[in-house]
Length: 320
Image (tube, rainbow, N blue to C red; front, side, top):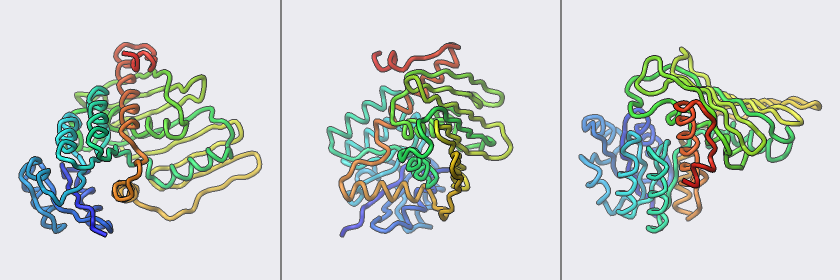
């Protein structure tokens, strides 16, 4: 079977990890990379036996590139994705999918018309702890979901992100996980946010309602000295907690308590391997363009709620 030819657009703080992982995957030929920092792109291309392209147009013209990943600043996602789709390439866009819901819908429509696969990079969906939690919930071991509480805290990393705040950059992970576990669309959002040291918001508390229940509470900031990534679920029959970093899951009910002991596995490698297999096997990806759009819609609602100091009802946004 012919290896899938892949190109990476943007090889900065996160994109460089795409380059590394693709160079390690079977069924993949890492053809080329491009970045506005030419010296960085050249170095990574040489290290991983790929070709450095001076611009995106040249990379997309390569007939041996079947698929690309876009790891550039959010404000560039829409134009780059539409350009890649027009070139007939399958596309994975890192979260947030785009800067606006309208741009996200344009990309979804373009990918469908071009018959190319579109995936959004929600790496936490591929965290083994999330897979375990979803199984526990789907099997009814903690009963009906009542409340979820997520914390995504840590220091700001200079140079990693400059064009969006913490809601679209970090809280969007937990927004997506909430949708995934609940399997419903959110009905309302209320948020409080502020900025102490950055142009955009660097701390936020977000409450998301799914019909009458469950309710998810998300806390995120770029202010905490040490990284913390966790989720707690309260159900009618028990509780569940997970640590995204250690990938440990704890489940407690009135009858038993259990901790997962599975071996640590890199979520990004699982994600990019899924992307490749979805293309080869012509299957819909786990994190679709619609997932990216709906998570972005909730993030935008949270920003509007923080600005207007009121509850935002998602149905109003979908109608408008």
